[in-house]
Image (cartoon, rainbow, N blue to C red; front, side, top):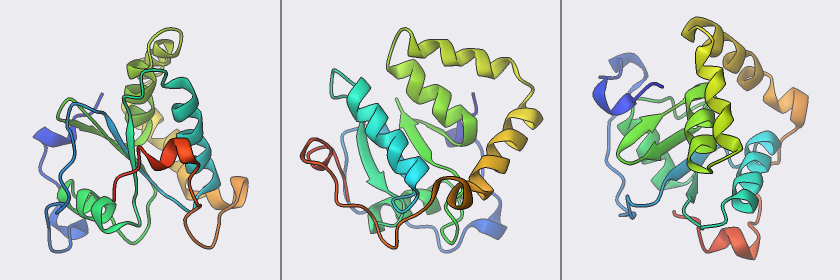
Length: 157
C-alpha cells in the first residue's frame, strides 16, 4: 500500500500547506471523505456498521479540518477525488485507502488485500475511473449529509 507520510507531495497541487488545528486521537484510524458524494457517504455508513470496536473516526473533506489534512498530504482541495485514510501514522489514498480500511475491520474484510496484487497503474486507473464519475454513477447532495447519531459521536471537524 502507498504510505503518503514518507513521500513529498508535488508543489503544483499543494496550495498553502496548513496543519489541522483540531487535534485528534491518532490511536483511532481516521477516514476523510467527500461529504456530498453518495458513494463516499455510503462507504462511511458501511464502515460504521462493520466497525464493532468503534475504532474509526471520520471527517468530511469539506470541513476545515478535512481540508487542512488534504493540504497537509498534498491532495487537491478543489475536487475531492480520493479519500484520505490515516492508520497508525501512515496515510493512504485511492484504492490503497479502501484496502487499509478493510484490513482494519478484520476477517473477512481483510481479504480485500488481494486487490494489492493488481499492478499499481491498474489499481489507480480503476479507482480514478470510478472517482471521476462517482456523482454521475451514484449521485451527490448539495451539501454534507446530517450524520446519524452513531456517526455524529465519531465525526471530527
